[in-house]
Length: 302
Ligand SMILES: [Fe+2]
Ligand SMILES: [Fe+2]
Image (cartoon, rainbow, N blue to C red; front, side):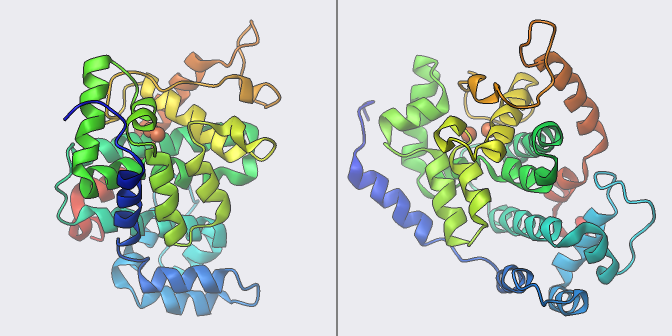
């Protein structure tokens, strides 16, 4: 197999594979619908979620995790819904469904737990950045960070041949994954993830953040969320957390942060070292997601 552009036909084939993936679980699809209706009450939503026992148990467990820092133990779904709010609930349920969808019969080309370690690290880092530049979008930033590289997972599981071509190029030419994909496949893991997210009816904001996590400037003025993931991903790579398909750091666009309220050092540059220190501390505290992923469903709900 040589390292030439694989062409449009292959890109279409990958897209087709994504379209053939199963759809969003019914309960979560219904949740997305009812949460968009302002007349929906907490008890209606709670009744709907309780029809899926595993999802209910996981949501309760997450609501009680250190990450949300809620002052007392949440014992009922109604209470969890009120405390977390519809936005958090929406993004958490989507995140959990995607993780579930890909946790069965994993036979991709890399270590599943390490992949989610990177994803989880990026989720924490992206919401940490959101705290500085768009505080009201912290929960969206968390989920966008968690799912930003889902395209790599899809590529590796459903288009294995193309995935290995990219990996070979990354290893041989010491390139970065995103540029190698662009050159060889004509589509990237960001495109693939966005197709999937669109098929699963993710909120548009989330789809855009995932699609542009390597190129937030392309979003012009509405690039806050994508910028959070862009910096979050860069930070977590600098800290060396989890699997990322290649050793090289992704390209980083610091210009997109010029008007944003990020932490800066004495030279006015983004305070990357300070952010890295913060991230390490946050990662030590917020490990519930990773436990759920690594320990499997039975343990996660006990
Ligand atoms: Fe990426
Ligand atoms: Fe990444």
